[in-house]
Length: 280
Image 1 (cartoon, one colour):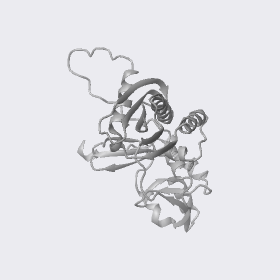
Image 2 (cartoon, helix red, strand yellow):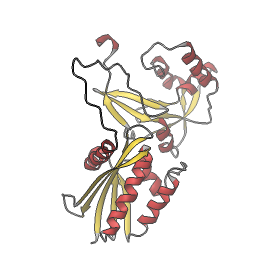
Image 3 (cartoon, rainbow, N blue to C red):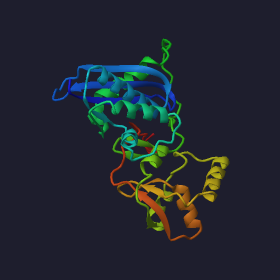
Image 4 (cartoon, rainbow, N blue to C red):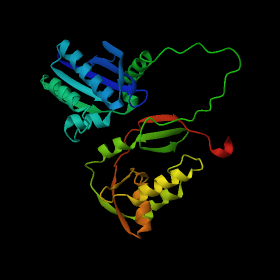
């Protein structure tokens, strides 16, 4: 068997949390897959699940005698790390990255391509099936009137950036944005052009903050480190750096260092946007 096309995806409910992998293998030139795998891998982070799917998929391709492999993944971070464009710093990913590179070296020709999530739909579906297979069974619902859901949605990431696109809220893991922006060129931008982010509720999620929450952000503003550039989207939206911008204003700085994506990375989460407070 000569060339195979490998689609992989990993998913985690929580970060870390119950995780799954999705693997799809196509013979070159064929529209129907001949191998599909969706499995639970237990507790893992999103990035570990992505790498576990890649390693398993490469092994499946080698077992089937492939001499050439083209990997398609919607994990931009993993694709760039495999290419050597981004460094791998996570101790959880270092051995998986090494194993993936070792397996890739066994093919006569190999390449990895970052694709949008819509181009990786079957692998994504299989990975989510793997997540579901690892979740505990739900208890039967009690009869009677269902209780109204009052628990607010919580992001699985420590630092997030989100924006509303139509009826969806797009959410990015800011720690992933740091990795993706690591090699972007740094430029100085006028503080006033990015300070409009402070006219929005960028920290409190639409709720009145407690005094302690205000103190927390005041401390972050005070300790903001200008050696790290702020991150801008392709359209100039601030994706990370609100505390640095606030400190720059307080210090009457005219410019601040920034990096800007030429094209926005795919969001980590897409979810139905909350209605505005006036509509609730």
